[in-house]
Structures are given as C-alpha cells and as structure tokens.
Image (cartoon, helix red, strand yellow):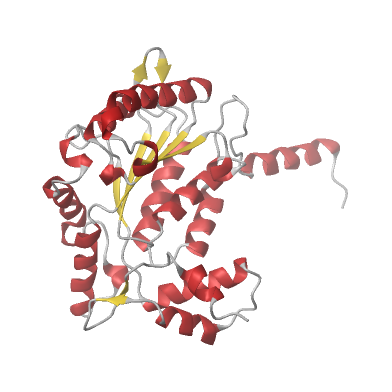
Length: 310
C-alpha cells in the first residue's frame, strides 16, 4: 500500500509529537511528554519504592506538561541511607534533560561540602542566591538538587525560600518552571518504624501509602521535632512551599538482591541469582532479631559484589 506524501508527512509529525522532547543545553524553552520514559525508568531500576514511583511519576509529569505552572516544582525526599533518593533525582534529570544529571542545567549542592564552614554563612547566602537566580535567568527549566538538606543551616534554607513561592518572580526572573529536589535523612527512622509495624502486623508493604497511618504527618512531625535539622528553624515548611514529602521505605532482602542483579548488568557480569542472593545476604540487616531491612540499603552493593567476582 502506498502512502501519499501528505499522509507520510502527517505520520512523521505525529511520531515527532509523541516522542519525548528533552531539554537541550540551549536556552530554548522545553516541554516534554515524558510519562512513558519516566515510568519505565522508575519501574525498571527503582526497587521497593512503590510510593516514590507513583508520586514522582504523577508530580513530575503533571508539572512538565503544564504550560503555565503557578510555582516551581518542589520535592522533598526522605529516607535512610541507600534507599534510592539520589538515584531517583538522577532518573528525573535523565527524563527532563538530554544529558541527564550531567546537563549544565542540573545543579547539585551537598551541604557539608559546599557550605561546610559556619563562619562563612553570609558569603554562602550571597553565592547561593546568585547561583540560583543566575542559572534560572539563563534557563528557566533549571533543576537544583540539595543533598543532606537536613544538615543545611536554616539561614541558607531561607535563602532558597523566595524562589519556591507561588508566582515567584525575583528581581525580574520567573522561577515557575524550575525544579527543586531536597534529599534528606530526616524522617528516615520514622518511615522505617512505620514499615516495620506493617511487617509485624503481617501486612504487605505495597499496602503502605501516603495516607497510611498518616505517614506524611509523621514525617513532618519528625522534622519539626529534630532539633539538629535545618528544616526546623527555616520558613519553608511553615509556608507550605514543598509540594510533596516523599518517603523512601527501607529495603528488604529481595530488593537488595534486585540491586545486585542490576549491578551485574552494569558491570557486564553474567546474571547469577544465587550469587546475587549470597551478596545480598552478606549485607547487614535490622532490627537485630528479625533482620528485615538493609542497614545501608543498596549503597555498597557494587563494592560488595566485586569481592565475589573472580
């Protein structure tokens, strides 16, 4: 069957329209119907985090496809070590920018690295304000990832606050297309306790959702009660500028095993379930009696795996 040139052109346009349009490194505006790619990455390379997959997919897709958002997207990831917070931030970047987290429009700040001297808070505050404002003025769809947010000084957190607000326009620059992601261990112990209670009650962890036992409220209460957290003394929470507080559940043996299998692929090692199980079981688990959750999640899986490979 022959197609007319007009028909062929229409098909080409349709295919182009449905293909993800990732942000380039230019200053051109970008929108991306990224649902399929983001969902594939979340379902395929994130283990044991059904709440995260669901909330991130809906929140990010809705925001990116909104041609006129009224505020930047602000996500706050909470959980213990090695449960996937950094990994998910990279997945989001990979589905928004052509170069993923290596894009010049993705800016990562680590509290104890970039802002480690308390005597330089005024300098850091001025620099942080300049960095955020300058990058968004050049590229509205900029992404800012703040790691160890719970260790960040409240003075610096409050510097970020004006950029997160509704209809944010700071010194002539709109921040409504920007994305802010906070990574934090704050609330991690509470999340683990809720997950452990679920397990002890014989419930499936997949039954645990954001409204289960008021999980989001428990996270917020834990943040507010943590006297060492920068969140406690900042105004971001008080002004309700975080769109989603997303809990990362502690990982069980089966999830660590999946991480090992995934690392085998990255290291070009032939898949071996028995080896993956052996490596996973060699990781430390808690609590002491039941040994249900991995102490370090999947954080050191690769380092442990190479010890078993000839």
